[in-house]
Image (cartoon, rainbow, N blue to C red; front, side):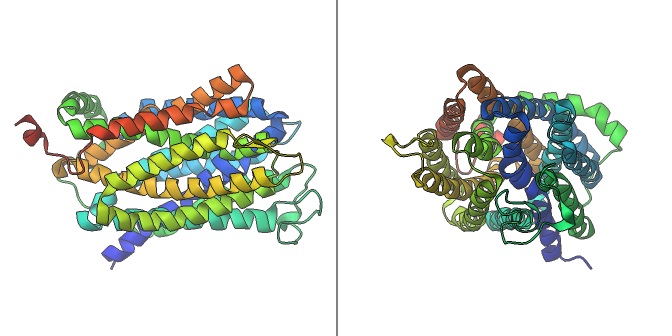
Length: 449
């Protein structure tokens, strides 16, 4: 018998299985490797910005229809199987990023396929949250899931650094061992292996999800072909009605901006450290471990604060924190820290960036957890799945803005520090729009009264 507790743990395992795509590929290992692959930090940040941004554009254009189809069909797990195959295949394809013998189009296409699979699978699993716990426990469940995911990402990063990544100076891994599988440093196999590692990790740890998570029956569900035919009219009706739900509308707009900004930090953090501070992959990995530790801890604590103070308070606090952190990052370079000049051998820039990394992990973990539960506070209980689809739409409709604007700004300025400033603007827009969001939004009929 599959108990509610086991269903919740199965749901947690999706976060555990999927987090390494963010931790290893988007932020700490593969993104910084793009600098070595292309030979220049600004060029790598530009290509990465365009690539991630265009993948986000595909997600934005297709996610509303897929969400509407899934809502009408009453099934999510078959879609998650499909997106999981995309995740695994796309991640595995990064193995072929061989320095001096690679196709940039193939590599970025592989990455985009994996990212699209990961994002769609996340959308569909997030929509399962209201079926797992009562409203008063939603913050705890969401926060614990994010924390569990961060721990999974951290352990995957430790495996990468401790058993696979080779130090150029010692020829061994971070813990002093020869790399597994006889990986060749000259061909950068020790870094390229991050793609297959991410794929295998996901395949193995999704097993509990598919074994334990069960979907409740949805009355009125139709076949997938019938759902596909009804998707566009349903979507148009939902979007027309949205402005009448003012708090929900404001929240969707707010989260659209601040979630895009947060994704921008995750997408470019490791690449920024490689290009501006000249960090090695191992240093960036340690930075990642620190961020995942604080992320796990504060996602869990944020879940408790969510249940006590409400998700809006948690969101505001963390958006302000992250805005300040990005402003601080702009003023950290190899030659100066917050306007104070330092020598070329100074460790102050490294220490300052490690501190910022810990704060990014803490703020990001709590923010993402609270954002899921805030949607539950805004949504009509009779249309909770539909509104989670809107949440996915708002998250992806502009998912390309941060990476594309960073790519464009970096391209125009030729400076990585200036290149990340669009993130600050996105956070501020999200914070301003939160002013129109009520902690417990009235239902549509109450709003019209």
